[in-house]
Length: 43
Image (cartoon, rainbow, N blue to C red; front, side, top):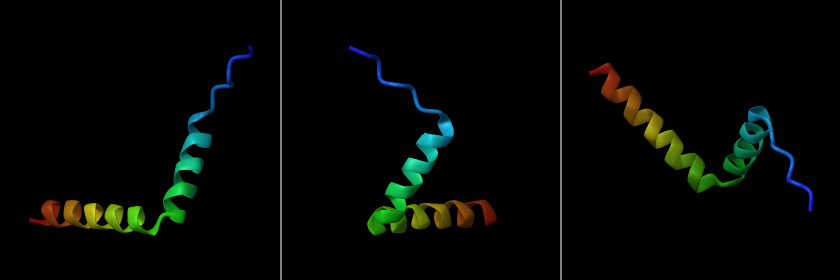
């Protein structure tokens, strides 16, 4: 059996981005988290 080829970091990031963009709920949660971080830093 062959070893599965290791993916480069860029490939993983792109795949992750595609999955998140396809998942509206996850996207909204991420946006909410980012907004919270920005607000806490602004204080």
